[in-house]
Amino acid sequence: MIIPIREIIMFTGAILGSYTDLKTREVPDLINYSMMILGLIIATTFSLIHHSFSFIISSAIGLVAGFLIGSVMFFLRQWGGGDVKMIAGIGSLMGISPQEFPQIPLFIMFLALSMIAGAFYGIGYLIYIAFKNRKEFIRKYKEHSQKPINKWFKRIYLITTTPILIYLYLANLRLEYSVLILMLLVITIASFYLFIFGQVVSKISSTKKIKINQLTEGDWIKDDLESKGIKISKTGITEEEIKLLKNKGIKEVTIIEGIPFIPSFLFGLILTYFFI
Image (cartoon, rainbow, N blue to C red; front, side, top):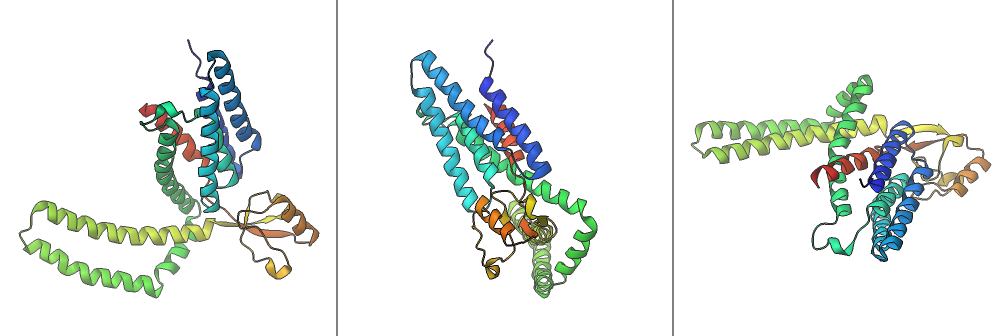
């Protein structure tokens, strides 16, 4: 019996990373670096056993590809530093072999499924945040929905939709055309309310005040500190900048909290190995 050691390491790392990401918004470097190193070690062992460099090359390509893709998402401020390291670790273990082409490489399939899973997970997470802070959410939702631009949109939508519905009722259109028009009307109003929902949830969950001692490298600072002579890196605060804040006597700052994305990688792994 062949033990799927790489899969065991990937799933263990993703499970542990998901737990720490949800609990603390951080993923220990020990988990991520262990996945990267173990991926290279296992690939090197296979290369020695089979007298072929293909295994170590595949692992190295996967690691680099994961790091590059993760870095793009990081600079777009969609992922944190822990997400980048996790995806590089999975890339190291899963690898990208030239022999996989012209078929879709397993790692690319994993990335695509992680993005799809992440979309559904993100919506579910936002709903959870809204329910958890439901009193504040309801209050802010009412405030937001009363903005003039939102009121005008609802009025215009009602004015334009009413004659369309009357026309659909009176006209003898083909069923598929009627269904298509109704779907467009529903999608339009649903997108409007989903947009408001997302804006309100972001206001009640995306920022948090923390003590300087709780800051970790890579955190995104919302406060404007340039007036105090401190310029914070746009890609996340560095250790040197944290020390500078302490030396300036700043006690606390406001950080931007994103959605913990590591669970999406776990869902992506589950879906990947379910479909293969």
